[in-house]
Length: 194
Image (cartoon, rainbow, N blue to C red):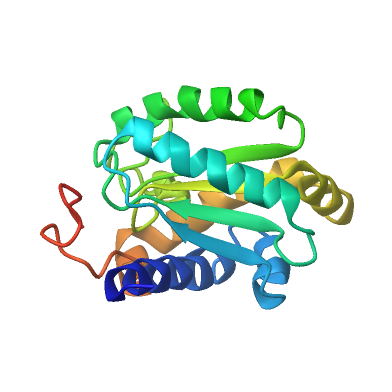
């Protein structure tokens, strides 16, 4: 790994530990993190076609590896899609990649982005931060893992509402205090702005 890749992984891991696990935004994340079953892949892609190739590779790898070794993958693309709307448009390509590999119903892809905005919310709405990461990220999740998690957490549909309440209570100052943003500056990450 390069120093830059190490930094991107460290920033993403810090976000996972402090925000996702620390705020309990995903009650299922702690278990796979503690067991070392989260794989961090850093893409050098600067555009959609290159990110698609990296996504295809990571999807194949995740499907082929024993879940006890790798339960989930965070594919981080620090130089691709600094604009959230462009990233959001790429998700259709990501879904086609799943279909191309016949992995629909086997793996899901969840999007995270530094500028993530839920439909119907303002850019500065604190609830958007549940899906804000230091860098554009595709979370590749095994469907069997989701099924197991839902069985152990029967009110999984309530997670979204609980997360919104958590973020509203935390507020922008509380989020900033978590220190889960990127440590690389815009010059280190192409067009990406911290």
